[in-house]
Image 1 (cartoon, one colour):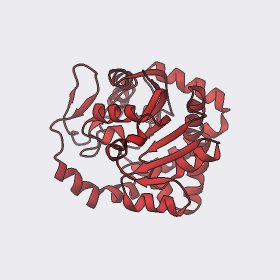
Image 2 (cartoon, rainbow, N blue to C red; image 1 turned 90 degrees about the vertical axis):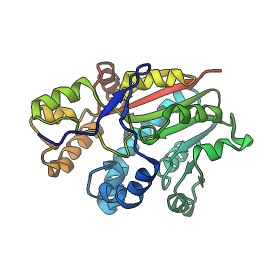
Image 3 (cartoon, helix red, strand yellow; image 1 turned 180 degrees about the horizontal axis):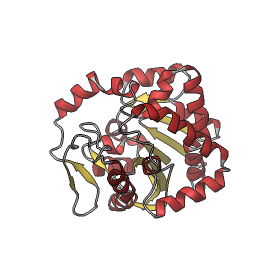
Length: 299
């Protein structure tokens, strides 16, 4: 049995969970300065970023997979829900991989990134990525209502006040603008079944940096409460299925790379339309490792 996770409480209105107590600002700052990227490199956080940071063939294969799956789905959703002809903002753009892909797909994409180092690397690649937080960007009247679309990938779970962040993003979008949000899908029935099968409990709780924990349903309720109309909920490969089949990557993290490769091959082998139908069906029963929501800003 693994160690007990950090305690959480459930928001009584919207249903997401959050760490209890919340981490202090100085604790978070110290974590990000001293431990976060070390955990990424060792596979303890943000595995996609870790594989990109590895460079070489590992990074190239990761970019190929992301381009054919997540990034392609983002382009499809942005175009389907009306953002294809307008400006699109990637929030938390890092070194610009997604901005570059969106531009290559014909979208008018730019980004903001709070890290000075990461945004500088993006600009050195010729990409329009400014060093700014959402709050700083929204403080400029020229940016309010200026975007037809915005993308928020694996950011919302890290912030102390997710509703405030969503409300601020809403000021950047024109009425009818589409927001794409991805967060981990946590505290699901599938995780509970895997925990019972493997004898682990709450391995997905990642304190202090993962502050909030959303499901498909609670993310949709949160978006609706913040002035958005959810129009599509989907997901990706339910990694908990491996645990249910006896591949205990929680007890043996060395299994992780091989399981990811099997997932990668599975997703690349499927036609995009078939994969999207499958993952929409998974989302409808609460399965999937992440939640990807598309929501339209209400007037």
